[in-house]
Image (tube, rainbow over all chains, first blue to last red; front, side, top):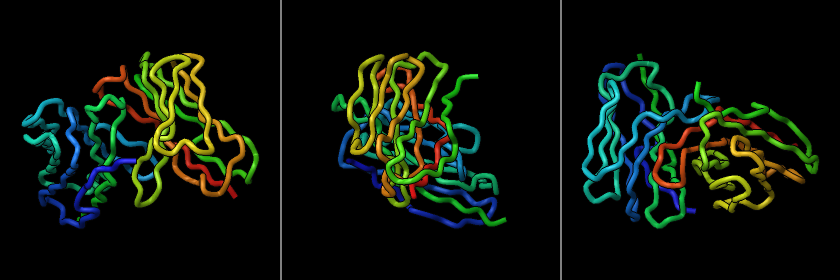
Length: 112
Length: 113
């Protein structure tokens, strides 16, 4: 099955730093979702993007839907220890398969 | 509270012993699906259902069955589990089969010995 290219795979950052991660694909999507998964839990939806170029914020999180519709970015500002977890992107194919394709995840570790 | 629930959360079983993982959602969603999550492979779709009595294979359906007799429930059945089905399983639902946002259950960690 298809997967999205998500980078970086993992990152260690200092508390207070800003974080950026992205997802890219060769396919065009008309929806992007960003999730966070804590250890032992299911993914929790952070931000949903429905339109090319859209920039949406949720607290310290900001995500953008790329103009080409083949990529998306998630930024976390002023990271805190509870930001630790795995962040996933998901893109919805326009080909009518009715499913989301998921990135392989970015594991974020925040050093206090 | 709107939610997707799964049971059990943890299960250890032996090869060949049939098991069922239940999934239920209280949001009246039409679309439900099952994923497995393995290290380095991300989330892969096993089966999905667009409505009652309508199911279809995802990317990795081998060794699994599903049923959708009621809108709220979508159980995952392993008729004869094998060790390569040891994984973390997630049920998910969304309102329709368009681009609605998708919500996940808390996961079921399955170990097949």
